[in-house]
Length: 184
Image (tube, rainbow, N blue to C red; front, side):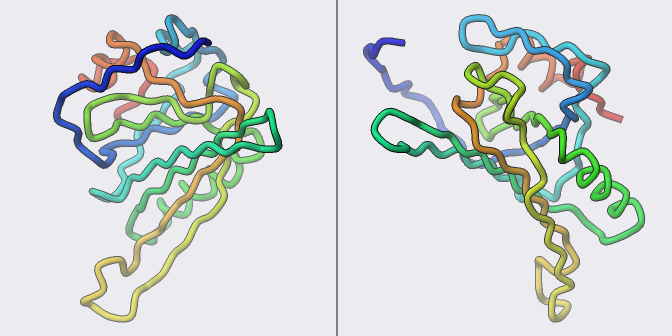
């Protein structure tokens, strides 16, 4: 891809991420990329809604030069769930069990853009996200806001940037009608 003119969009920019959906690699079987955007995902209702705590979803994508001619991209998704309970343990065990094969995630950012993290045009499906950490702390008292929450971290290293979904699929995801997402 050749370097071209980049024009900054003069528009409101909202930080943060509002929602996360996670799919196991085994059920998100193919991605269609059209004009550098994901236009379709094949699979059996692959992306499951995760009810993370408000304002706890965070996605970081960072690039780093390796040697003279190589580049790697790292993705890190963090979110909090609560309370510690049997259902929370069941969810965590599913992440532990699915981690060897990996996951793809949909992140809805503060600007209403939907991103597929764990899949990219360079590695395709070969460097998905994996559970890298789960952290549960009770907190020291009633006034500790983060007490009795579980922080979950998914990460990967890959060769390409995460891709946005096209406008049609983004509208379906945001509107709750995307067949690739399970809402209930």
